[in-house]
Length: 467
Image 1 (cartoon, rainbow, N blue to C red):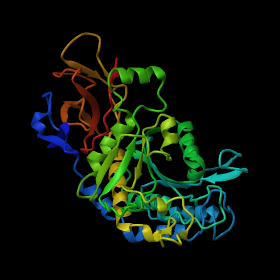
Image 2: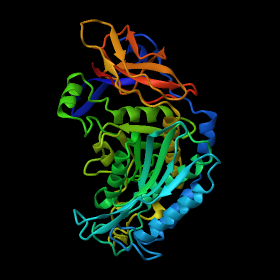
Image 3: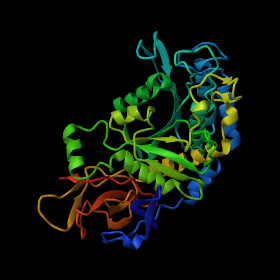
Image 4: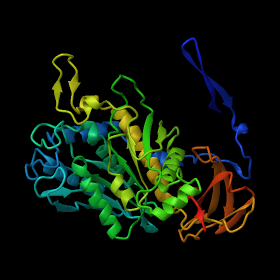
């Protein structure tokens, strides 16, 4: 059921909104296939996610806060304070976790680094180090999925690297998600595709660490089919006291940053603005991670990010990789980018302190990430070269795509939805083919094609361009 605003009117100074309630049977047009049912978590996935532990989340954030500041310009060599100490602890912790990997699961821990020359918010040559765990895919290692959190922190003055910058929510919470996912995933046989879990640096100064990681993957020719940054995922309470412990926002860009003007013009001309790879990825996450095993509702937001903000998904989008951002539902800006202090007039505590984190909430966010990541890496890859035939006037729709070579590929499904619907509504199984004609007008609906594995996992949909 959904409500639609029918009209509004003013009565004696009051604004009256009149709604009609519509059932799914009112949706037009009708068409082939059956109603799409979200992919249910498998027993294996339930077992993986059950291992995510709020107490470990607490311990990880507590340790990261203990370094005083993790500002990108802080000490690289002090063993107990600064970003260098945090980097070294993260590398050691990942290596310790990796030693517990299941036999046959190949995990590599690296610390890719470079010297960033003076630039915006970087006054002197500065070392930027990411801490990266790579779990090699079993049958399709060139296909890659990435999850990050950033381990640097800041206070009110972006150039202040001396004062304490605890960075509990922004973004020790995201790093805790990364470490917990590493711990639970390596205890299983590896999925088909490669998983990269990274704590990146330099986010507050200008997304430097994520940019470095994205470039490394691009240079290696990696087929990055999905990336998520977890940035400010530590609290379910907003600045007006509202609490929403079972929602997580997922920001997904519309028109892709990396597309050519010609492709953008085509996408706009066919009404495809809402079907970028990032938005197909977000729809996928909503389908596989809004359920009882995560205990969460994924709130997809159709925009790149919040107003006046940015994140580590952007360097991936700039290189043509589908990417999106997880952020808590209601932010408290007194606990972000603030000097640690108490307001003398109001008694209000400012600062990104651990006391404002909700560890159970963060664990559920980790489960959302885990459900998305495992479902992606276990499924066949997203179909490529998907086109829709526009050569003749017809009320049928012919779709074509490249037949995949994935091990365990069972076939494909055509998805469709009314143009006004935000999520896929109908599915048509079509088998192991690379072309199909559907008895539905392409003028009236949006189509997508997704791959289906013999294990039951399904890929995100790919949107067809004229061809």
